[in-house]
Length: 152
Image 1 (tube, one colour):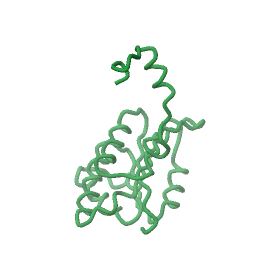
Image 2 (cartoon, helix red, strand yellow):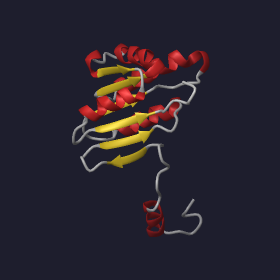
Image 3 (tube, one colour):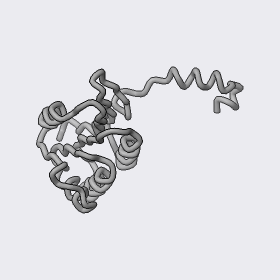
Image 4 (cartoon, helix red, strand yellow):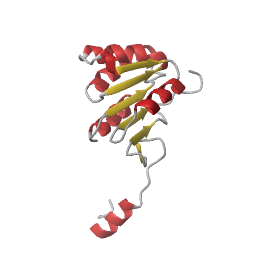
């Protein structure tokens, strides 16, 4: 579109360099500790969750996913979270599963042959924060996926 509007490649490159990501939507945060956080916590849907995992897979280093799964999915919620687990199993070295969907996500991961010892199950986000705060080290990439609505 920019070319059709008459911009050249230098102008387009400068414009792209000035784009800032929307907070909490695949926002990459480089910490001074050498840890990378991919903050995709604002909200999520099936396609967005898969794309976030594809993004995580582009990074080098140990890949950690902290997720509460997908909600407000109606009668398909268990299936959707099972499938999310299958997708996580293909990318993550460690998974921290939080809240009401954690067991369905875990079962999806196990169905893909994922090692149960690399899965942490917690009830609340604060519990997950304690785990990843203690385990994260230089070179790690943490994907924070989906913050639940207030009614969960």
